Image: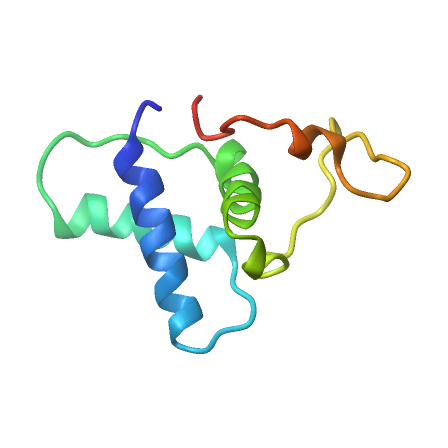
Length: 100
């Protein structure tokens, strides 16, 4: 993982929203909070979070924390392949989408 602290912040801020009672949240909101924290609130080397990875962060969070499935509303990705039960086969075998 190139920037493991990004994932740590994604989880931290998502759990903050969950613990405040939110039933749903936008992964874009979480990522923009990370952008704020790492650009405005901290010092050090700047890095970019590609918008292309936001949906993957949301899916990865829900895969690791199935009790929060549906917290992020996601659309099917073009590369998703559905099984007969409707579950995404790609997510069944996904190792770690955040390792870009």
